[in-house]
Length: 334
Image (cartoon, rainbow, N blue to C red; front, side, top):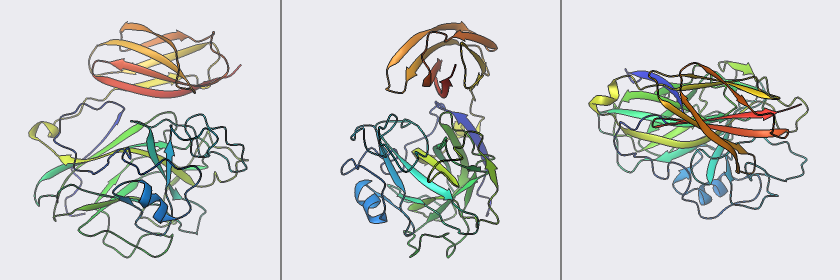
């Protein structure tokens, strides 16, 4: 791996900004030619819509929007699409109105893959340390999660003429994950690395074959779903930026744990923080409406939140602590 991986850091939404300018062009898929309604079946459609993004092979990643028609399959988070294909999951973009989605594992032995390939505004400088970062959320209804994903940096765009595993190139320089299994909100995965060539492109996905890919059963999977086999992730906010001297120090990690999930009348919150801070919260329904908010004061332990007044359904809880903003998804069932 040529001494690429320096450190692996995982943090919930809101990692402190201690790095330089993001070199990724269109990092959050917000620059798009148009909104799209439906499942993207041709890689050229994905590339035509998502500015400066391509696919790397002949498979077709998806794009999801909050501002297309509600009856569209790829409307999020409250699509009224009637079927027959089951939703991969329910998620709102980490930022803005758009996000991507990729299938990283399908049926064992098929070695089918989707990749997203981005470009950098300037080449990496050989010998310079950089941070790669991406926000991922596992599709709630999918059969599996995977242990890790990879990033392949290249000087030219990768283009493979099949929808299978990209394996005719050098090994990916960056791996990240250690169990990419969150389906109740976004997780940010970060890697510090040193560039060994002047790369201008990068490709994100699963570069291991099915036999090498470690899969984990997803406890929220829909066993009766159509199209929910394998492992599928929503993707947003991709970052490649120079690491400053301060970036080599440990990034503060804030973790919000909620239980039970599903809940009925009480939601237990546990915030594990490196220092005590004032904490506030918002509860947001699936339509994006704030249904409750309040202050929780200073705490690093556990608190109970009364949710007995909420109707059955899916919700998001958003916790603000200092400069950290953490979002988790939960459901109410009685």
